[in-house]
Image 1 (cartoon, rainbow, N blue to C red):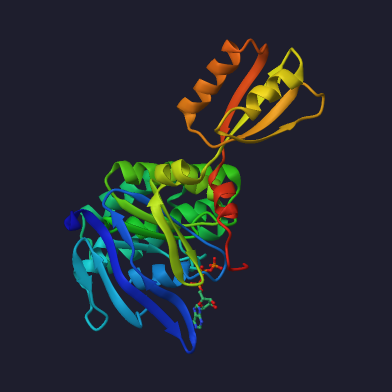
Image 2 (image 1 turned 135 degrees about the vertical axis):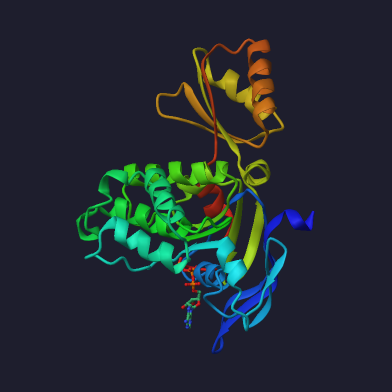
Length: 316
Ligand SMILES: Nc1ncnc2c1ncn2[C@@H]1O[C@H](COP(=O)(O)OP(=O)(O)OP(=O)(O)O)[C@@H](O)[C@H]1O
């Protein structure tokens, strides 16, 4: 079981003067997962990621990457080879071309020709920048620059990717392009930990999520378990008959937590505590009771709604 963990921390803690930025975090990320790290500003996400990337020394605790311990006073060159880290503020060099920039980092990782040029072509293709290989970085759009940063992060073929706020400031199209690349990397077998405030993106990408608050990891679970445990279904119903007949049935249903008649008087919004099968049972029981329905529409609360209703202690 343990050797399936790509990332494991035990009691990981970082203290800056008197402020504890990361507090006793036990994190487990299975190999092959896309793990989303969410939490308000200042919750400790960047500090945690920096420690995982060996860019910040922990005050206490242990970090294991694919079962091997990351130790502060060693150069960890083999472990660093396994890691790709995209910080939220990494500089690009505007007066270099895309190719020269990537070539520079490939040389730092000691990639030799002809493999180096082949690898550059591969990553440029993956991040959809092959056409821009001779362009100066200064001329790229923000989305292209971020894809180039991602290319740099994976140039040495890491197996664990740490991405800190990679889509912040990108427009919806650029975010979608970025998500597609992440998906390809996951399909290629990488483990990806990604922090973001764009929860709709994380909901589409992640297999698991962790929620940080005041330095603590307060939740860490698969996305499907989180939805199962905390997401309520919302059902929208429209009846062609008398509304009282419908609401009487709803009042008798154990999984209906509440309902509200919407404007027009024939449409009802229901807070429902059951799962999809329970929704189907409700529909069957209403039809069996002879309630004439022209709409039965079931939606699940999204990640953002779940996050907001978790009752956070920390203000952003
Ligand atoms: N080098 C530092 N020195 C002192 N305090 C720091 C340092 N780095 C971070 N902190 C503090 O640690 C806490 C956690 O910061 P961190 O940047 O890890 O949070 P975050 O969750 O990434 O926030 P955001 O979502 O805004 O990026 C904050 O209170 C921050 O001010």
